[in-house]
Amino acid sequence: MLSRSFFSRPTLNVAQELLGKILVVGEQKLLITETEAYCGDDPASHGARGKTLRNAPMFGKPGLLYVYLTYGIHHCVNIVTDREGFPAAVLLRGGLFLKPEKKYIDGPGRLCKQLQLNREHNLIDVCEADNFFILNTEYNFSYQETPRIGIKKATEKRWRFFVPKSEWQFLTERN
Image (cartoon, rainbow, N blue to C red; front, side, top):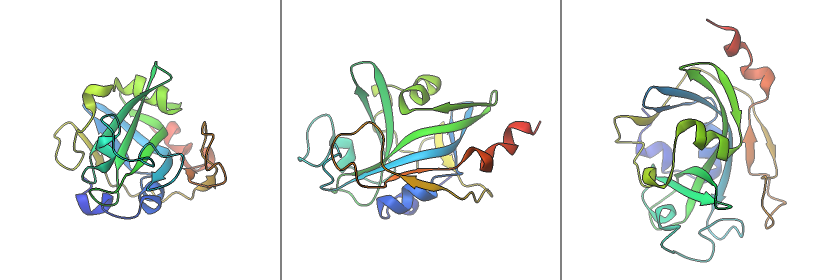
């Protein structure tokens, strides 16, 4: 299980280093292959204009979940990073489900749907929860950086990180 010190670091580092880790939600296991970083006064961040009821988890302690509804239909899950009081989080965008069956999911809305995550999961602490945590792995994948997806502000920032399919595809072939 990753410790609070893993999340209590600069958001870009956490977003990159979450790649290849395994998110465990109950019986499901997801190899994280795509993330996006949002922090501080970044205009694309929910926390850029200050603390509100909706984005309050972003200002919480590192390791908390920030789950929100977008477009009124899709939930998105983020993990708070950096330091308490500073709005920063990593959006989980995609991954390879290893259990109960192997299948790839891309897009934060589809990922939350598959994991059955919603606002009720807001504020879960992945450093302390028994059935929701992240495991370190031996995987050391290379990754690529691109601009983030689906935003209209700060589009020049290359804060989306993903593991190319060629790096993780061998896992789909294992029994």
